[in-house]
Every structure is written in C-alpha cells, then in structure tokens.
Image 1 (cartoon, rainbow, N blue to C red):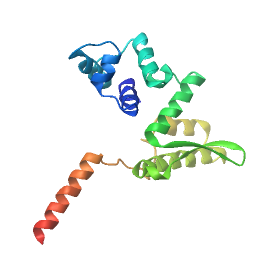
Image 2: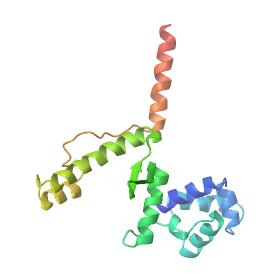
Image 3: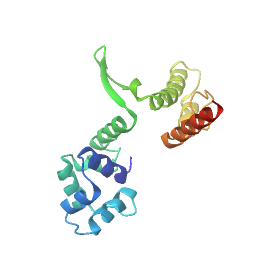
Image 4: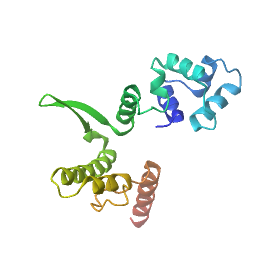
Length: 177
C-alpha cells in the first residue's frame, strides 16, 4: 500500500478529517485540507520530518506510514502488517509453527486471495515433488499470472459497481411487479 493510502488509513483510524490533521501538522486555513488531500492522492510526497510528525500524531512507527523496504526485516514486518490491514492476512500458530493465513470473514477478498495462494502452493508442491524444476517454478512466479493455468482466480468488481448493479436489478424487479 502506498504512503497516501497509509496516511488516509491511519487518519481515518484516528477519526480525523483532513483539515484537522493538516492543522495539527501546522498547515493553516484552506491549505490544511488541500495539502492532506494532495498527500493522500499522492500528488505530493511528504518529507521525512512530516512523516515522523504524522507517525507521532497517529501513535505509530514512521515505518507504518512509508512504503516498506522489504529488503530489511523491519520493512518486511510492516509489509505484513499492511497485508493484514488490506487483505485480512492473519498470523497463527499451528503445531508450534508460526503460520500466515487468510481471514475467511473478509468475503470476496478471502476467495480471491485463497485462489491465488492455492495456485502458488500447487506450483511449490510440484517443485518439491520434482514435477517441475526450479527454473520452471521461477518462470511461473515471475510471470504470474500469465502462466497460471489453474484459472481459479478472477477479478472481483468494485463495491461501487456491485452496489450499482444490485440497485438497477432491484429497479427492474420493481417495474415488473
């Protein structure tokens, strides 16, 4: 998740309006909400001192706001935390081992993610069983979804489109009565 979405996520989590956050950061008048809207839309990128101030206001680490550097353990952890917020990824313990799992209560997100992860697991199992070699496995991963022939995943329409279609269906159903 990009920094603008993270700012919006944590701002909403704190129950703040853009104007309120902007004023807390020292932007006055009309510029306060405009500046925050620019950061959230990623038309502007806040400098590190401003990120640190926002992190302080949100009571989070600056790492939670910035786009994580997955080449570090801290960055990787914040990437996993973002996946928890965005896709319902959960951490569990099964038979003494730490496992990442999907939260079934996330509905269509769960279904889509399950299908994609299932396809990945199937390819990993083929590699482990010697059905494919490392090069074929890497080719599948690095060209995903192009080489995914499981066809278990599909794009899910946006909530707005889904709501619109249901509304139109209901209108048509009412007219027929």
